[in-house]
Image (cartoon, rainbow, N blue to C red; front, side, top):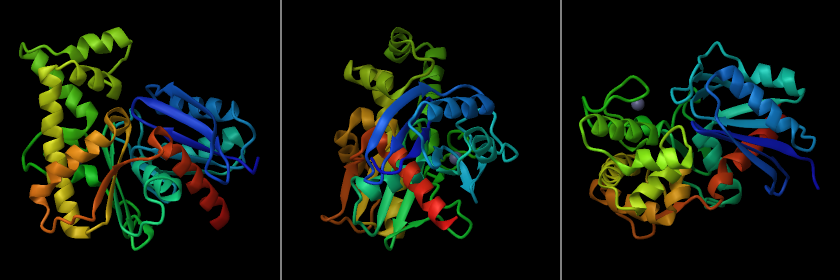
Length: 313
Ligand SMILES: [Zn+2]
């Protein structure tokens, strides 16, 4: 086996980690629920990496704004701010170089290195999980903007003055299509007297929140609230994707994240239909695909980030 690096994918509900070899193959994969505080997250990542065979570097994908290997904000994780130096804490605990990237950026990087976007020059990545992540490959390079915080697809405005978003603004696409916000909307329906199978399924599965598999089961069972919220989320996602396509004209849209793992290519096809009315130039040759590495995209991409980081110092 070649030299291994660790790839860690931190989501709003779960953390996955594995050792990844130079061929992007994933070994010793493990998964745990995301704990409630930033320090506990660091401790858990440390423990999970220590369980792996020896690695020479660690890459971590996190749902937040990340600049110069520092997390600026992470609205879908509790207790994170720019003073919390996750890289330094992990480096001290593990004794190897540590690199962090935005979760959607490492997800799309994984797909670009070894999945659905291999060889592509212009790609929009949309990651549907606890929040809505976004990432871009433009002219065959990852694009992050002038200061590294671009590509925040989830905070494209789809409804001025609309639903409150985790970023503190109103009407972002994440406020409609992010799973956390969809869960809050379902709770508001319940408070207004309209119950949903989401909550009984959540209790039966022993989940603390409405995870992607809870949404999958509720929708498969025909739950009206879950279906309506999902339809509304996809409709808003279509508006945001149409706007992004008009601006950037990518050849490929890759859908990733927990909701895409749950619903697969069917979700990508629905999103394509929803984007069509908002796209100026609908191209027959533009493809919408579900992430090929499924729940390993983030791990593979985080590992690739760490390898690149070690090379460039
Ligand atoms: Zn927002």
